[in-house]
Length: 88
Image 1 (spheres, rainbow, N blue to C red):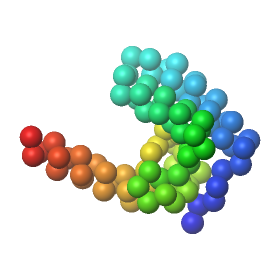
Image 2: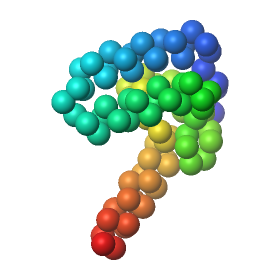
Image 3: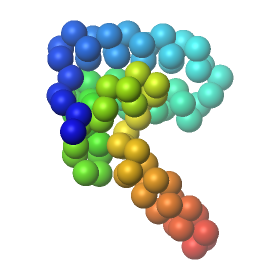
C-alpha cells in the first residue's frame, strides 16, 4: 500500500507539473490534466486515486505526476469512458 506524500514531495511534484505544463503547451488535454493536478495540490487531494481514494504509488506519480487514478482504477475509468463513448 502506498503512503501519503510528504510536504516536500508535494512541492517537488508541483514543480514537475509546472515544468511539464510548459513542455505540453501544444497539447490541450495534457495541459488540462496538469492544471487539474495543480488544483488537487491546492485542495489537499493530490496523490490520491479519485475513485478508490487509495494513495498513488510514488513511482506512478513520478512517471505521470498528473495521474488521477491508481493503475487498477485507471483501467476501470478507461473502460467506462470507452463504454460511454460507444453508447453515443
